[in-house]
Length: 199
Image 1 (cartoon, helix red, strand yellow):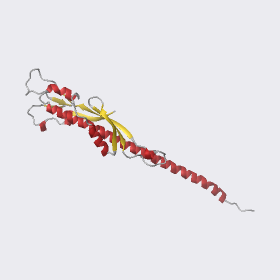
Image 2 (cartoon, one colour; image 1 turned 45 degrees about the vertical axis):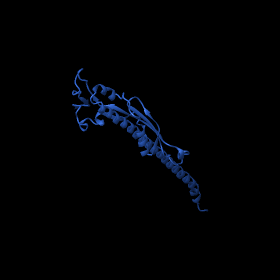
Image 3 (cartoon, one colour; image 1 turned 180 degrees about the vertical axis):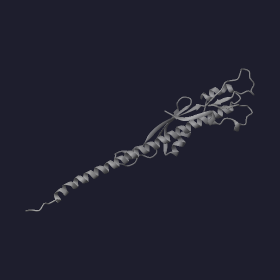
């Protein structure tokens, strides 16, 4: 009677084992590639958000400066708070902040009187992975930031003197103003305007 040989079964199972391990390794690398792409995409969105906010903050500061220059002329305040005054282009700030986040601006411009939209692309590609083409793939993202006035006021009666300035109500905080106020005692840009990301 011949003894049984078990080596044959083991020999047949080994290729299956190798195939399963190879498949699992491929899946692991594929998940890694997806993670790399998601990480790069997040970096692009962070850069876009920062760039758009930087441009909007620059506009906010310019508008606050316009308000300060026109403190004695309350009739001009409404146009300033509505963004109906000329301000310098703020895209240079978007370029600056995008560069700090390892990206570059591909598009920047105003949307409405008080909004800025910025499109960016990462400086570095996703990188090598099991997915072909990722070594030359760059992430892109866009963001919009807006400036919103926080203050309301009512103009004084016609013919009122220069010494009578309307109080500002800035979301519940009231400012009693005088033309002779020290600038340090006047509302700061963040008191006058809010800046935030928008859809």
